[in-house]
Image (tube, rainbow, N blue to C red; front, side, top):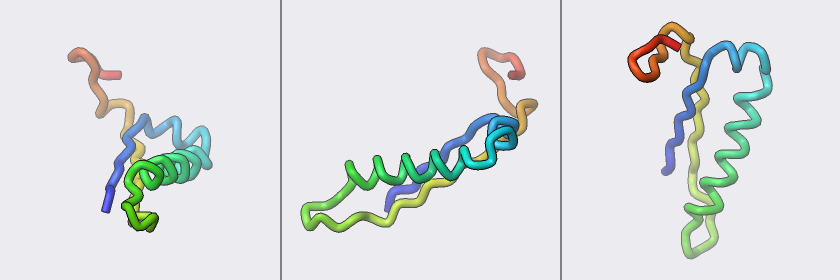
Length: 64
């Protein structure tokens, strides 16, 4: 069972309410394409999209 977690700035999800859904559907399809077993059955794939407040991100030691 593949589990994919996408973390991104919370404000990006707030600015585009459908973004999480579009990302989840696209990533789910891609994972299923590459993880399909020899019997052709689509695996159970879980995709979560999490918004993280900007104050909790750092890059190169700086808050983003």
